[in-house]
Image (cartoon, rainbow, N blue to C red; front, side, top):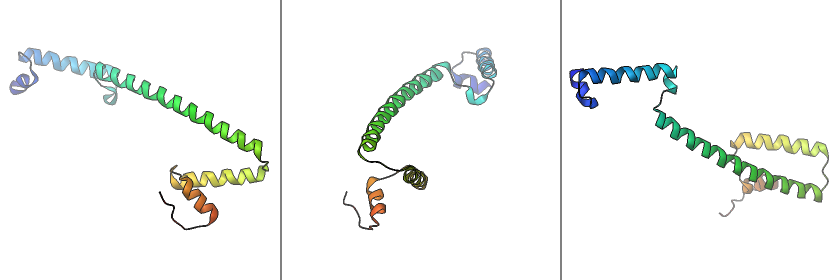
Length: 121
């Protein structure tokens, strides 16, 4: 403790002990070691996460609008029976699971055509 109080920047052992007790009381107030962060860090993280959440929500909304427009135009142009749509949905779910969501249009076209030719990127 003699060595540590100077490393901590405390002026005395008593100040070092007071700092340690304050820290421990804050830790106990948090009720969980995983939740314990200085308030400034917690506030910063909360703000950044709020910004990220708002940005992602806006981007997902825009993407949903574009997807709805495309699907609506496609539905207006062609008539598909429900059995075909069920099969396509099952195939799409399998494709997304198989590729972990990293689909490439070129691969889908290649699979649909049964071609093994490589696309030029």
